[in-house]
Each structure stands twice: as C-alpha cells, then as structure tokens.
Image 1: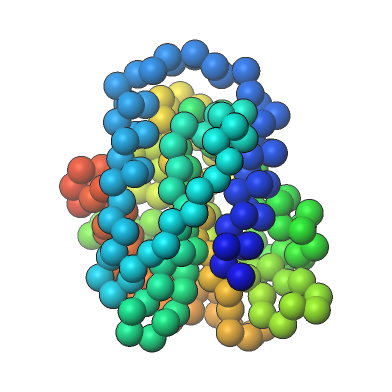
Image 2: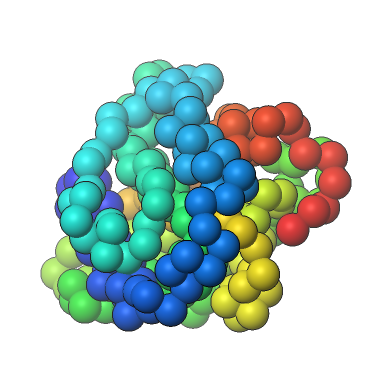
Length: 220
C-alpha cells in the first residue's frame, strides 16, 4: 500500500514539474550549493530512533525531465509497534521543486483533497517550529484516508508559503518534503500521535543532515 502511495505522489511531481523544464536550466550552473544539497539528501539515516526504513527507486529518466537533482523515497516503520510513515524528499533548482502540490497527482488517482491547513509542528525545533501544509485525501471505496504534509526549505527551517516559487526563486537549491500516513479513521486528527512521534525523531535528524547542525535560527 505504501509503495503505491509513494508511486502516485512521485509520478505526479514528475509530470507537474516537467512543465518547467528548460526555463531554469543552467541559470545557476552546478554551484557549490547545488552539489552540497544533492549529496546531503542521500545522507539522511536509514534508521532514526525506533524507525527503520525501506527505500524505493524512482524512474531516473523521469526525474531528469522533472529536474529533480536528488531524491529520497522511503517508508519508515516503527520497530516497536509496526506503524508506518512514508517520506519523499526531493531537491533541485527552485523552479521545478517549488511547483506542484499533492492535490494534483492524488486527484488524478481518484482521491479527493479536503481543506488544506497550515500547521506548525512544535517540539521538534529549538526556535520557531517548522510549518507544513496538511490535508486529508479520501477515495471511495478505500476506507482509510491519507494524511499528507508538505513543505519547502532552502537551507533552513521547513516552511509552507502560499507562493513558494516567489519565496524561493533566488535560491540556488531547494528541498521539498512530503510526509504521508494512512489514517486509522475518517475522523483521525491530521497530525496524529504516531505522526507527532515520528516527527520528533525524524525532523532533528533531517535538519542535522541537510544543514550540518541543529538550526537555532529561523533562516529560510
């Protein structure tokens, strides 16, 4: 199930971002920031606290078309209780990476997106908490909805602006993070206890990997 979830999301990102191919090619060249950003994604630990992961590979040709320079696609499983959380982290030039939200790809797969909410995630960062767009995706006759979180970072805190292309267009490298969980019921909170526990372990490890240390500023 989680492999299908990530495949739908990845295919939608690739198709949506491909529209912008060529517009920003070689705008910055292979800068030092680009090289560092690409290498850091792959360094995210496969095991974080009680969570171990299984990686998925995406189509290399489609990633090239979409100008996704580096990516990580994993399903993290809690070793104590078996709960699962899917993670897709992509990186590249801000033009392609800033566009396309999961409503496009999941609606194309028959899902209906509920109200998109902006939610800060306290307790995972020493200063200002990261912010994510969060939404519920339902599909008939699938009984369990999907809860999807997404946000961007250009080298600091992950945030969820209304217009990421405008916010990040000057940056040399941009990360985009999706966190996906199959909810237990239709009325389950968008960020349930399992998701909160995962983020408390995952987000500091993500921040340390991408930024080299725990960020204490609100750099965007």
